[in-house]
Length: 482
Ligand code: BYC
Ligand code: FE
Ligand code: FE
Image (cartoon, rainbow, N blue to C red; front, side):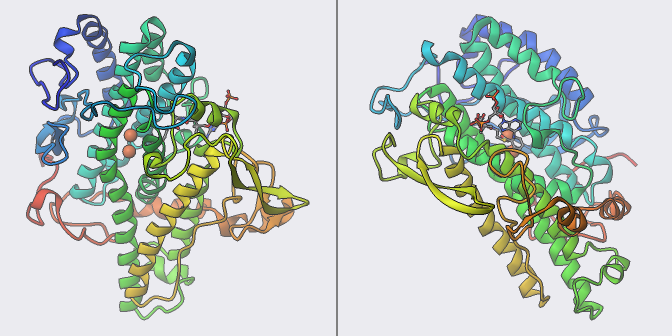
C-alpha cells in the first residue's frame, strides 16, 4: 500500500502518496522545490522570514488530530503533499460517466480540460500569497500576524497540491505549467495571474479580512466542486485542502467581526448615534461602518466574477465529463446528469434585471454562485448580530449580483448595490458611495500602524474571542527579537 493516511516525514517533501518509491515524480518535485523556495523568499511574506512563527503543520489526513502546533521559521515550513483517504469502490457521481469507477489516471479525452482546471486552481494559491505579502509589516497584533502567515503557508501548500498533480499526471506540459505557476505574478503587467480578483491589491488589513471572507470562500466553493471530481487524485487532494480552508474563512469572518465590535463599542462609549458621522468616528481611531460596507461591496463583487459567466459551455463540459461537480453534489436529490433540466438565471431583459429559465448544464456557474451568495449572506448576518448586540443602528448588506461586475451578464451595465440599473453619469456621480474611495484608502493606511507587543491590539480592532491552540492571551505568536 503506497498511499495511506500516515504522512511520511523522512523525505524532504512530507507526503502520504508514497513519493519515496515514485522516483520520477520525486525527482521532478525535487527540481521544482528550490524554485519554489526562491519564489517564497522573493514573493512570500516580506520580512519576518527569519523569525519563529507559531504555526500549525499537517501531520495526518485523519479528521481528528491532523495538525500539530509549534514554532517554525517560514522557509522551514514542511510543505507537503497530502491526499484525503481513498474511498473504496468510489464511482463517478455525475455527468455522462455517472456510475463508472473513478479515474486513477487522466482520461485521455479530457486531458486538456482537466489540466486547465488544475492550472487555474493552482494559479490562485500563490497569487493570494503575493497579494498579502506586505501585511506582516502593519499587523495589528502578533495574533493577526501569525494568522496571516498561517494562511500564506497553507496557500503555498495548495500550490504544491496542484503542482503534484501536474508533475505526476501531465508529463512534460505538466512540468511546464508548474514553472509557469511560479512565473506569473499578481498584478504583473506582462504575466498577470489568470483570474481578475487575484490581480487586485490587498493594501490593508480590512481588505485582507474581506478577502479571506469573500475570496477564500470562492476557493471553498470551487474546491468543494472539484472534491466531487471523477478524477480521484484531484478529488482527494481538494478534500484535504478544504480542511485547511476552514481556518482561512474563520480569519475573515472573525476579523471583520472584531473590527465591527471595536467601532460599535467606541461609538457607544462616545455617544455617537449616527454611523455616518465619519469624521467623529474616525477621530476615535476606528473604522466607520459605511466604509466597511464599501469594502464589502468591492470584495463581494470582485469575488462573484470568479464564478465565470452565468451561462458557460466550459462549465457544462466540466460537469458532463465528470471533472467538476456541484456544491455537495452527492447530497443533491436528482439524476446528477441534468441533461433536460432547467435552472433560473438572472439576465437583463428589456432594460431590467429578470430571471429566466435556462438549460441547467451551462448554468452551473450561476448555480454555484447562488450557493456562494447564500453562504455569504449567512456570514453577513453574523456580522449584523455583532452590530445589533452593541446597540448600533446599522446593517451591512450584500450588494446585488449585478453590482460592479467585470465578467458575465452584468459586465456591460452599471447597477447600484440595490440592483437598480444606472446610466454612466448616475453611476459616476454615486460611485463614491458604493465603492471605497481614495480618501477611505488614505484613512485606512493611516491606521495601519504595527502592534508588536504580545497580547496588545491596534486601536481599530477588538481582541479575538479566544487565542490559538488554547495559548494564554499574551502569547508571543511571532518571536521578533527587540
Ligand atoms: N478573470 O466560460 P466562462 C481559490 C475567462 S479561488 C479572468 O464563463 P468558466 C483561492 C474564462 O477563463 C478558486 N478571466 O468561464 C481563493 C474563459 O476563457 P476562455 C479557484 C475569466 O471557465 C483565495 C472566459 O473568461 N479555482 O482557490 O466557465 C486564496 C469565459 O468564461 C474569469 C477555480 O476557479 C475571471 N474571473 O469559469 C487562494 C476552479 N472568469 O475559455 C485561493 C477552476 C472567467 O474564453 N476554475 N474568465 O479562454 C473553473 O472552474 C473555471 O475556470 C472558472 C471560470 C469558474 C474560474
Ligand atoms: Fe487555497
Ligand atoms: Fe484559502
